[in-house]
Length: 339
Image 1 (tube, rainbow, N blue to C red):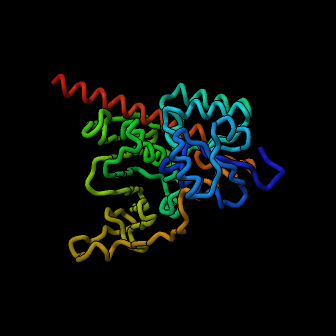
Image 2: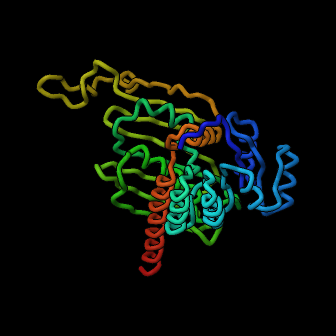
Image 3: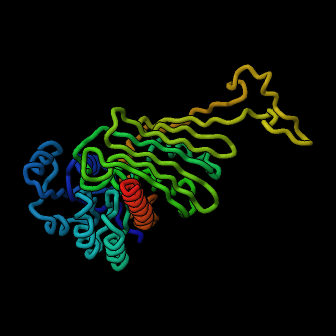
């Protein structure tokens, strides 16, 4: 849907930790008019109103009356209620991940949006990470991906297990990098500080042969958000926390490690240092806040009629895989207890 105007009215539902930053960026973002926000906790609403000089509304309906687009940063359990109410009015949606707590709720959101032509984007913000964007020119059919997403414990997000809270970022990310469906899932996990799983590992096998090994924890001593992407042309080592990375590959004009009739084999026995063989290419990153990039992408999809980088269907696919991972973890725990 292409618009004739150069801006539109937008609001935010839920101004907790993440919703606050959505409101902060939208307040000054070119091409949108920030109309206000709604939060069920009135004390929190007052705090944000004073901090950002942005108006809060006393009800969600009142906010929906004033906007053409909405960022939903409420708890996952309320995503469906808020999203369907907004989509029924034709209001475009940016829904924080996960899109919904289950697939039926996700389908009802997407169906409501399809009926009115509303754009739906899902907040898998790592797709806008500077390191990921800088790595794109070097991507060439990834065959193995390994990611670690480790965080210290925080009460935020504990309404869902760590798979839906943290790992789902990497589920969406590796799916976008590989570009083919997941065929097999093996997973395990443990609840430590909450009734839900707090640390988890999943091995995803994709159609075409690629494999991804994902680890997520919200009970770690050290923070880490790193991903390594291995392919025949070399490998990418990305630090998502710092938006940095490098591409490593065999130097040009060197013989391969395994020779053939036309090219000699590399003599590793007489190679003193591996770095004489490997070229390290630092990625050229643009230092822009990923959340700002995400909101700009949402704005552009509405104004110019394109597809957002992370569609509603992408969000549903990530949720489907994440829920399958959780199911495998439950089976693994049940098996461990019975043996």
